[in-house]
Image 1 (cartoon, one colour):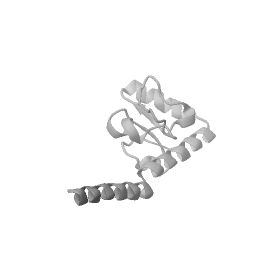
Image 2: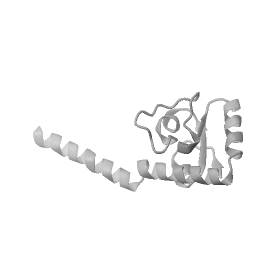
Image 3: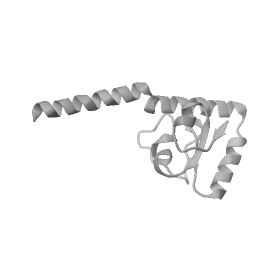
Length: 116
């Protein structure tokens, strides 16, 4: 399955996203997985298929070309990308990641309040 939606929900459901190359989907939601340390999105240099979790596009022509590329993937390639996309958003935006981030933020806040 393929979806055109600007959020991490399609990836969490195991869908292959094709999103506009702007804001969250462009900067960090539809990102390679595992995420390279020095990741910087670039339309002219998309991540290799081996790390892809979805596609970005800006123009109708780019959307069309990306859609063709996705549809031409083998079923095994599509399944691999679906699993990778799901793992990516689960690791970065899932409950465990939220709880960890919340706990760390709360600890920093409490430390600040104690030192004030």
